[in-house]
Length: 305
Length: 269
Image (cartoon, rainbow over all chains, first blue to last red; front, side):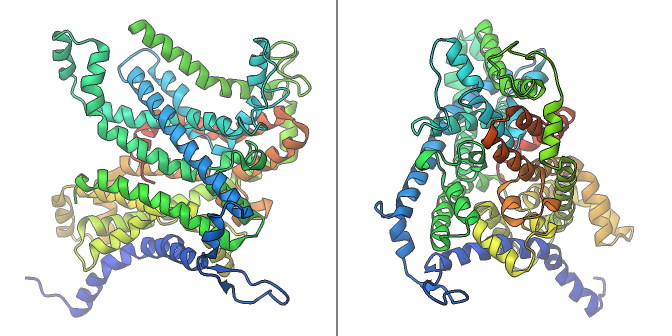
């Protein structure tokens, strides 16, 4: 055993803490404490009336939440629409985007000419800034000169008001999201497919199983974990990716295409409704947290400690 | 089956590429000609006037420099914080290790992107509103990076560290020459995810800055979008969009394989 000076050993005990301190402090400052502060602030409302400036916020209990869940309240009505839209937006992405990502992975998994080009074609949207992607689509969806309506008109249809029609606005946002995410989902499926040994397909073909039978009885069950994972993260992303709305109608007429985080962002930009903003953030954290914990329980546990 | 597959593949690829192709085409058409007029692809002539006009509205070179400083400033600090923490969690024993790791992983469960109000207030309290530091600081700690590198560091044979110690290497030297050197692919993966994520960030930079002088490209593009709303100058908007997205598309073409692999690891970020 080597003799150590007390000074040396004191520092070597401190070492690990010094190494993690920066990350730990940053996470406490920008994630943990703000989350806690959101909880307490959601129970308050800025002081009103004369000389309100500089006063401490009033404690209002659960009033902010009650208003949010009250349909007749103006903020409650907005919250309800945004929350419902976010769920629809998330579900649509899962139902259409995830199978599309899987299909792309199946099509582009094996060696083929120009594979790099094919993968670029479907993956590049997920690299673009959301606001850039949205800007591109704002042209495609544009009323008078847009590409979508140019195609419709050449087919004899008068054209649609993609971003301005309250029944269409959310669909337009969903189309953009699927285009943006499908290639991203594809790479998880490509990674999953690589773990499936080739030879099980060979024996299946020898047994006379068709491609479709092989897919249903081998590929799909073996990709079950990847599939679950992609579904969970696509839900998590749906609640966090909203800035495309900045170029795609800003939530549509009468919030018909608004999403929860974007509604929060709008209120922050306008510097108002702080109490509701905090209460809505709590709801948002609750949803994201639920899905992330589900993700951890399903997948992280067996990756080993 | 083969034929169905290649037809499907071609149709999807074309559909996915159309937005990019038309962005390019519209940016090169004369502004006054809608797609329905003249030659559908090129209009009556090819022109760069949209690019010139886009440059008048927003100072793109300034926004470029701002974006580069932003992503580089985030990444460089991240590399330091992440390496230290990853080494401590991978190879050191200390009281409270598992608990502290869980605290750091809370970042994945409560991403700072949804904590806009409180972080906005925190920055105001610190007196950092409208500074470059304010832009970067929430991203300086990365739980994703810690997890990724901790896993990679664990796969480095412990004998390498022991040998370096016997040669008299101190902690910093061990981390640098044994661990960092053996984890370059993981660092590249982390860097690609970090750079592309922050290059694309919009909500936080928009809320936390006011001066043109420090705002990144995404916020510049937003300004162009708002200008376009009023006059429907899509040619210049598409030109501006291409100016913003070009670096990432080029980066992807250069590092295609690494991108795909590193994004595959980034489901949690």
